[in-house]
Length: 413
Image (tube, rainbow, N blue to C red; front, side):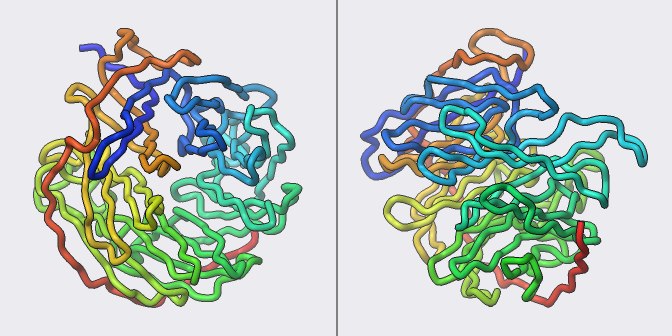
């Protein structure tokens, strides 16, 4: 059996009447960290899949821009600053690390227009921690600046102003890492952190990156993935109640009793829990390592994107989409995909037409019989059934979070 990897784009419409057509588009392309989806006026989509791609409303590529020379390594994240200006992250091409094994790379922030033409770009050399500094997520701030942070256990955060001049850079000397940093309505920052033995950690910081408070939830191995900020500075977080680091994904494999819940929790601006919901999948288990996403729907409710595993297995298998009301109660769930493909989800975009656009990676026998990952601007398209036909059963439970104070040590980078 020939197996290959492609980038996948799914558009779904889930509701009482499925009026809009759904589609899947697959692209042979380099990879990015987030596969961010940005809807432009008129319905076009601006995204990054190694290159930046301008897609029409049906997912066909109108224009692509590649940057893999001059010392930088592909576009990794892409967020809007204004209608025609986008902030992006990349990193310098790795070179041998002078202080040990491996390679050294530095985070890079830039701005480009919606055709992928770079307007400005800056490199930031960090003088502490490991050599590997490829940036993870990206948050565009209200002053048109940006915040980025390290991937996995590279526990640093960096803020730049509108001209991308460094404002501050700080590192936390603990085993853990940032999963998101979001700007609150008043200018403070909310950080989501996964730490050893501390579970889910939320920290409120001022605009200078100084901690105001930090609290932990769902100890010892809970994981936070994403957050949605409300206008009153309250927020909704999602994640899992346990981590693969408890057992390992391959060796040793998780025991049958390892069945973490997908959780959704609302907290006020001081980190006090308002409510918490949890979902357990007894048949297709959750694919725990992949980041979940939460967004607001066009009608003001919430939609969550997660990744199902195979039957009685945590290995990636299917996209999972769930809509809830403002109290976290389920309105509907959907799961889509072909039987001979396996999917890893990345980004979620509620479209202005009421549907949803999902990006990610797909493994399987591709329509053009390709057997390796190549760079191409020609999409390979393949149809799927409407999302509304994919009802599945879920057990819905409510759990009580464990909240405690957590002390973090931070120093300048």
